[in-house]
Image 1 (spheres, rainbow, N blue to C red):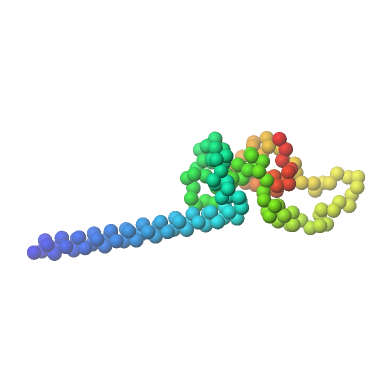
Image 2 (cartoon, rainbow, N blue to C red):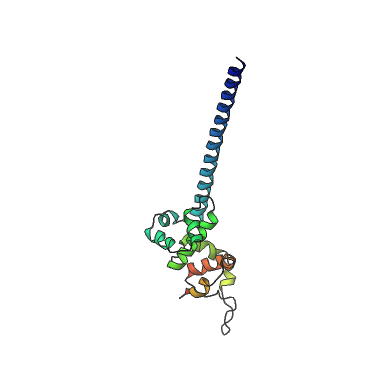
Length: 163
């Protein structure tokens, strides 16, 4: 009789443990889904053409030619929008894809009108934006690219990157 009570109690506790495991699994799945949705939202904010790029055979062909780390940024990454966004930045940079006009006008509106008007007629404008070369960008380390990413994106949108 004692063994029967003990085995019933054991079965009951195993059942409770299994119930807790199922609840935990459901919570973990919801959290993963939430992180994925947040990352996609951030990507769409950074790249309004994200959905088009995601479905592009050209993008996936480009990604397959990249080092394994960059491939992981694209295919094995459901939660880091920063890494995925950098992969898309590199893709756009290499393919010469220009940012949408919406982002372009934002970056231009940050400067004041006085900054855009030259008062010197004979001197070279020392505040002229940098002209980047594709080779210069390709040789950058990831840290340097991160440091100059905004400048490079603005140069890309303004056509200041040369071969």
